[in-house]
Image: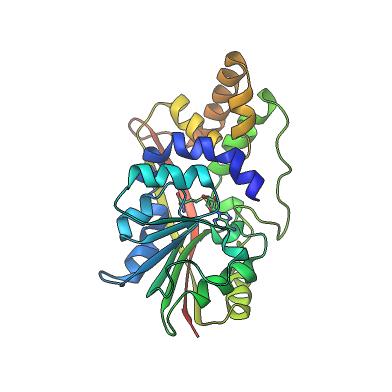
Length: 262
Ligand SMILES: C[S@@+](CC[C@H](N)C(=O)[O-])C[C@H]1O[C@@H](n2cnc3c(N)ncnc32)[C@H](O)[C@@H]1O
């Protein structure tokens, strides 16, 4: 997964602003759940730091490139480059709350990662995390990949079943089992449905979604005509989410996962 995030990082860095603005609804429910003054918060799998800045948190992420971008973008905040699965505690612990947007389902050993998060919290402190539900609730995610794939080189193996990937926590019992094993109590898993309003041109939206996903590295390595064909292919499959009016409306289905450290 470290290698996967190393090859994915350039796309995340390049599109950080768009991911912050268009992607904001993906994390809003968990931010609201933590409330107005949650104390010292750690943002796990913080990427390029957009939500870390919203929460004035400490950000932790395994990707050196994304942490470097987060430090450039938000020099007043603290960012730690580390794999949470290999830590006893996140540097800077104890924290008063933990937040995570679309990262926990990407942990290769989620019990180890969530145990490190729990150990980094004061007893009773809350965790509020968002993870994607299944592919059917997030149809634009595979659409961008399927539209681009025929036009670019080989992709990394796609996750199946419980393997780390966007839909690895789709079955809500999985979140409960992992967090209980990691030492959390009061685990709640609630559905949240949002719409991502993306005002950009179809080619721009297609490129953003291709570059954030597993075709990103192959897309960047492809010649310009293959890149254009990949954007067109993705844009065609994303056309059903256009309008009304300019831009796209992408329906996203998530779980809001909340718990308290034992
Ligand atoms: C889908 S991205 C989400 C980034 C950010 N939270 C957002 O919503 O824009 C998942 C992030 O989790 C990070 N990540 C994956 N496994 C990790 C691990 N074991 N330890 C720390 N970060 C990890 C990746 O590097 C990546 O930045």
